[in-house]
Length: 160
Image 1 (cartoon, rainbow, N blue to C red):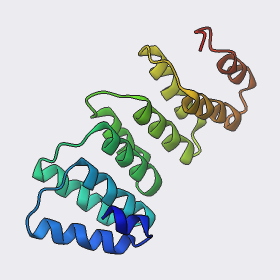
Image 2 (cartoon, rainbow, N blue to C red):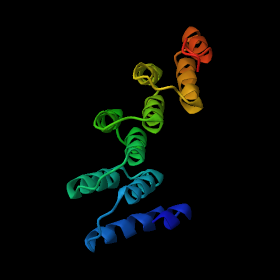
Image 3 (cartoon, rainbow, N blue to C red):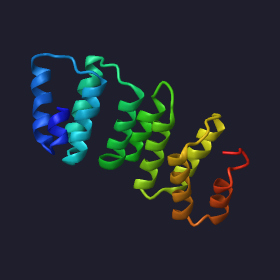
Image 4 (tube, rainbow, N blue to C red):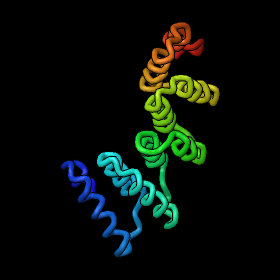
């Protein structure tokens, strides 16, 4: 599936996944991540949702990276509410999941939501990496909040 994905043959990756489920072979988190990316590439939200449901019903243990891809999938093709549901049902959050959620808000032109994510992440004691800081600054730009952008740029009083 990854090879098909890498060659831009997303439909073949999706077909292979469907065949895999018929055999039955239980997919793992990597397979799940790959197939979700294929669904994003072909803009097939219904198939992605059905595959998500299939994975959940089969009890596949997904990891934080797969959850972040799922957040991105729902942010791009579904709804922000679905992305938030995935995020809030994750066992824990890391930089990948926080950045996926921030990008999801920005994809929906919600700079305030993205900044709220940033603030929650900082409140949890996580130190933002450069990607998170850039997303936060982009959110400030989108809502024209120069003062907040300056605070973030200067380290937010946390010495980043």
